[in-house]
Length: 405
Image (cartoon, rainbow, N blue to C red; front, side):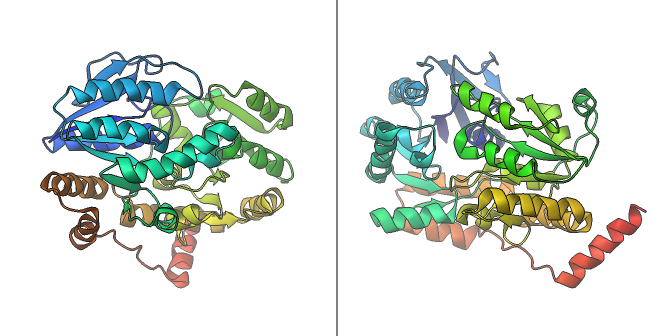
């Protein structure tokens, strides 16, 4: 099949969850014999090759402003796609949903990944929030299929609009890495720091983590990996609040990102926006213990394999949980093993690709969404996490502690 992805900044992935998702899925679809095109924003992606890992790349312009960047680029992509023989167009981001009508006029099958409740993000002001909420309804009319990356998002669309979305989660790759100089460059010791990774925007709540960490009695450091355009004032406020043990690295990619992730004591996800966060799966796949805000989507991802802090009393409870976990490394070891085990069982990129490939095939046959959902569950079920008893977890902890001397 001929498949195109739009609505993202582009690949090679160097920014957020959508880019990572598209890169991981697109390269696997190419290996399976499909023709895949990804539209890149000319002002963002520095890579200038025409292909990447077998994926065709098309660079189109945009207006690089907070409110118009995505929709203007996706408009240009949609116009180009209208005159291209794609079988399937996959649009990322609910704010781009009005453009699906143009593609369906041509007879192209359109998928929209709505990516959680985007209107809740703090960066959007009143009218932008109202537009995004309207786009949720538009998506239910403009797309052939709506993808929910979390079951809590499925519930939201069922309750608000009375429609069934398809649940296909993101995947993760089990991997470790050593060999770069990133730890030495930032004065870090393996397992001697807590890790935050994400865009430095208010809804990701780096400020909550920084304030909570300042209350923790420990020699460990807090490493903040990430940056963001259009948020200079917020980034300045983070640095003003940070104590001397907080290190801001800016963006880290490739081997540096993998190494700083592989050596963390623990990863903390403070974000309050519901929806699956690919970075959480990424960190679990690195074998990191994870401490997450107890939102429904986060709980859905970690199951019993992660520690949580309270969504309402966030700063106080986060500080308490951080203090407890830095004082109980045996608990952190158990969480590391549980996180990696859960990723292996439920979040395989190959299984995610299997589900998308079956979805595309059924869409080309004209199968209704309700039947597609049944076929996905019947033919490629998501494996439930294998239950691990408290005794077996304790045994593994004791074995690892003994091995470490």
